[in-house]
Length: 192
Image (cartoon, rainbow, N blue to C red; front, side, top):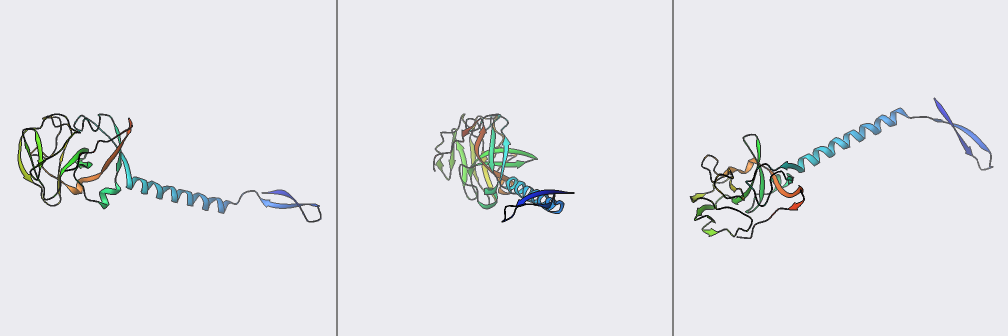
């Protein structure tokens, strides 16, 4: 099926030319390209960012129950966790959000509710509650020591529990960067 198109030549006369109504081959190629690039974009985005929903009060006051958090997955591939990072870990099939307190080689202890890393008290303004005492633990290579910001006993299942202990760095799925809904910045700790 063809359509006609009127063209004006150099003499000012109108000529009728036949133009194909649709070019099926070009259309199919266009759709294939679109689907390819859309699929590629989805994989890139899915591999570099994600979202997780905070459930519970273990990260209060930094993260609130029900907050939707943006997760930087790309950094989990290319960087090592540092003190104060909030990580999303996969533990027993669930996503768990905790703060990094100790990295490989650090010694972590708790005395009179104060957390010590390498015998230095942590300056913490982003926590609530008071943790129970814990004898010194040295973090092995490939592991990190994590805690919830809610230090009240029983509020956070974290590395203080002997059944959990230091967790594998390989379990890190990403780093929490910002709360999307409700929108707020995530509190960062003071420097050691």
